[in-house]
Length: 267
Image (cartoon, rainbow, N blue to C red; front, side, top):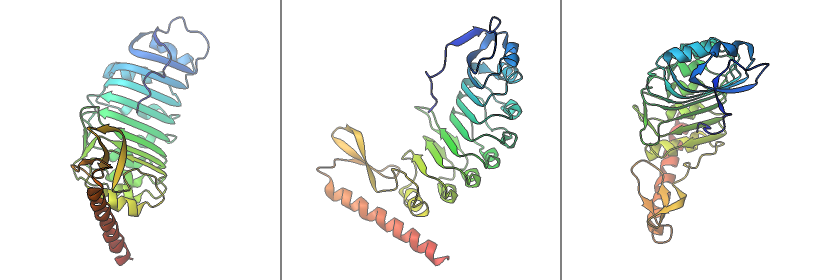
C-alpha cells in the first residue's frame, strides 16, 4: 500500500529553501518549483498533480525515491528522465491507460502502482527485468482491470509480488508461475481455485497464504472465520463446518496432484 502519512510537511513555496534537502514533500500548486533543481533531493513526495504540473516538476529533479499521490496524468513518459530512480510509488491516477518506457529507468528496483482506474496495458513492465519488488492493486471499492499478467513473466529477479483487487481479462495467474526467485507472493482471493493450486505446485519455495485450501480470518463474519481459497467460494465456521473444510482440502489436494502429474508428463 502507498505509505500515506509518512511524508514530511507539504511545502507550499520553495522560494525560501536554502541548502540541500534530501527529502521534500510538495503539491502540484507549490510555488517556485524551479528551486528543486538546486536542492539535490533524494526522496520526493508529490501530491495532487495534473499533467502539466507533473511534467513541470520532473524537469527539475532526479530523485532516488519518488512518491506520487492523486494524479490526473495520462502521459507518464516524463518518468523516463529519472535515471537515478530506484523506488517509485504511485497511487490514485484517473487518467493513465498505459505505462511508460520503463527501460529508461535502469536502476528501478521497487515499483508500486495502486488504484490506476483506467490502466489496462502492462506490456511496458516486461522491460523492467531488474525489478525485485512489485505491488499492483485496485482501489478500495473498484478493481483495477488489466488485459493480462503476461508481462510479469519477464521479471525473473522479482522476489516480492503483491497483486490486490485486480480483474484480469484472461483470468490467469500462469505468468506468475515463471517467477522462480519469488520469495513472497500476496494475492487477493479473486481467481479460480485452480489457479492457486497450480501456483502452489509451480512455486514450492514461495510463501503465499492462498497456497492451501483455506485461510483463517482474524475478523470473523457472523461467526464464520474460514475463507475458502478461490473466487466465489464460501466462508465457513471452523467449529461447525469441519466436514465442508475436509471436502475443500481434498479438492485442493486433487487439483495439486493433477497439475503435478501434467508437469511430470511433459518432462
